[in-house]
Image 1 (cartoon, helix red, strand yellow):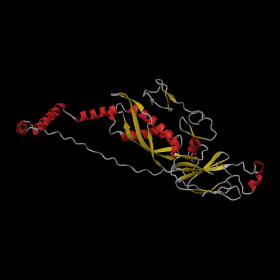
Image 2 (cartoon, one colour):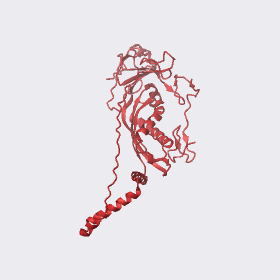
Image 3 (cartoon, one colour):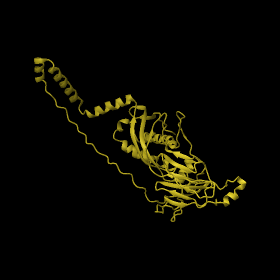
Image 4 (cartoon, one colour):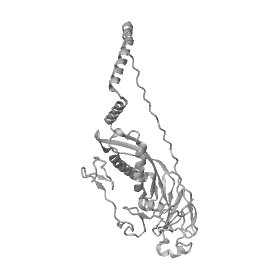
Length: 376
């Protein structure tokens, strides 16, 4: 229960996700409030609480009960806020981040993407799959994606994440696959490589792509028929023997339907036994989802306490407020330039424009989603 009032009583702040799809929820729901000094915040094991005071993120709270410290004092604040019509100018709100793993989120190509096949030429593919995400840097996620929204769900972010996954998927196919004839049996390899390629894109927003699976890659119907024909040709090792066997089977069938004459024909036909082909099937064992690791410094990799804001070994900031778009370095709240690469913090990478069809692709894209040509 969340108790917010304009009187003299202290607040007891907690939140339960009834839908199972909320990434972040703001308290109070109506906007910022007069959270008083001494208010109690209860955070569950699958949550993180972030206090915003005077418009800035003050700290992130892990599981447990915490006492919040603001400048709003009971009774006294009401008297001092008379010039502001009884409302204290010391505004505060708590954002509750859902740290659980959001599983079975679906991705797919809304429009077919272009792929230049070494044997089939330019074709258009459709791909579908599922993925799991988890918030690992709640302050960074709120500052970069949520903003001042009262709640943020998987539906709000899924459209953008689908676009990123499809763009990186197209790039990976263009770099590592020359023909669709080599695609069977490579879904696990493609899924693992695509997950690694997308890791930096998700980390920029404080998210972790815990798992990603490709469930289908579907070429046009005529291309599927060509792949099936090629597969049949690969199974048949000796075309001459195959033709003779088919002819013998046809003669045997004809002999069965013509009485005594057919019997004489059948006795004169040598029956050929078809070669037996066997395939060994290898089973893939699913690895259980690994437990969350201990908190480690991203710069020097020393083990730190879960609530550490700075590394005691190298001084690297652990509470991520924002991150450099170029090198991923954690930035201080008022930083104008990245201390690692010198990139201005206000600059954003430009979209990749295809020189052949002028289609706008995601920043860093190597192949155009529309025409399949390499983006210069």
